Length: 200
Image 1 (cartoon, rainbow, N blue to C red):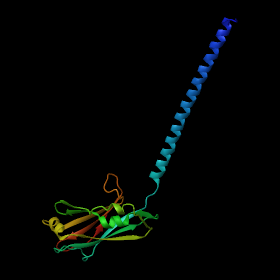
Image 2 (image 1 turned 60 degrees about the horizontal axis):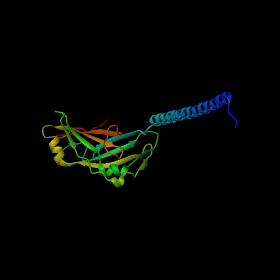
Image 3 (image 1 turned 90 degrees about the vertical axis):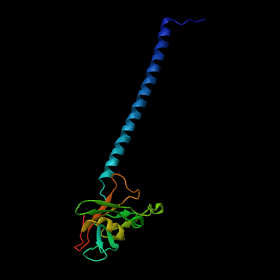
Image 4 (image 1 turned 90 degrees about the horizontal axis):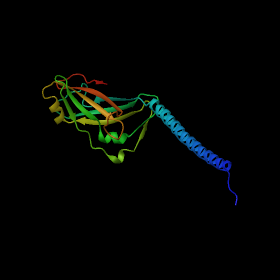
């Protein structure tokens, strides 16, 4: 029977140490590669996000005009208005046009003497129209007829001879949320006459 000498035991231990060291080296290399790839992915995601944020958005402008006459005058009747959503930029704009038509704008009536605000309710949202988008080419206009009831106008002009009607559209179908893209304009309405003006 052959017995192993001390040199043979040392060689065996040395071989085991080499195997352990090799396994540790492979594991370290794999961990490094994993963290490196994560860093690369994070950098790519950041660059993509920056590119998306810096992409120029279409320039849209909202205008309003009174259909019951110029100057816009409240005589105790409902006032019909026309809202014009204009693409004043150089890029196409994609909007849920029919959704905006059906729901209408958010309207705030401001007493020009006391600055008291009367906020009117928007129309109910139609979920079936949220994903129906239309393209608005540069220079193209969307006309949206709307009205302000005599009841709401009477409340707003109870102690004032003029009010400012502010119209606002939320361009995303997800409705009102912080940071939502909006367009707005304002129309001066006078009880006893006066010019109708649309200002941003």
